[in-house]
Length: 207
Image (cartoon, rainbow, N blue to C red; front, side, top):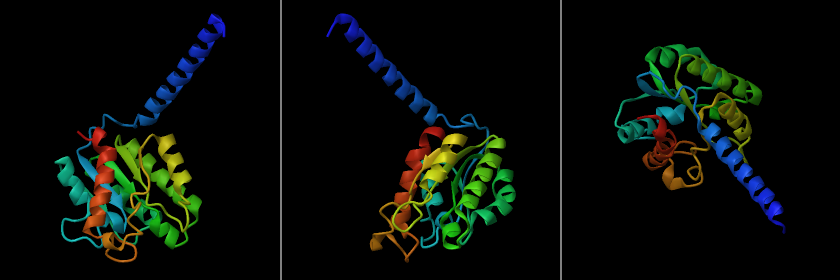
């Protein structure tokens, strides 16, 4: 191989590396990183509320301990994204959010809400939160019988809206009876795993 060919080859490899690094940096850039809000708010369904956990064993409470700051638990069991849109103003937007951890979708699946509506509702909530100047972390629960049927849609929202993305927070929990309080909900040990996963994802943006 001639010297000029080697130069061309190494130049090409360098450009590819630059593109990969630059793309990763863009993906890591979260909208509203300089949020002036005061509170971390967990907004979701029964997994956020902490059904199956003992007092203080829900993941928002555990997350509060890890972060060393107050975390608001705005979870409500049985809710769909339709329900969430009805209370997002009162329970989230009016509480000075710095970062909102959004966790919905499981009840949409169980109640057979059209998948696209779930994505549209989620996208609208993310937009509303970001317009207020707050960051969003989009957490998913791995919905589906044999594969996560919602992953691509939620990932697309996270990428286009530049949110923190935390996929499948229930990974490895649903199949382990010792981590569950019933057929669906974790116990204290399961919620501890969820809290750790969320903490690792959001810690760089919550000082």
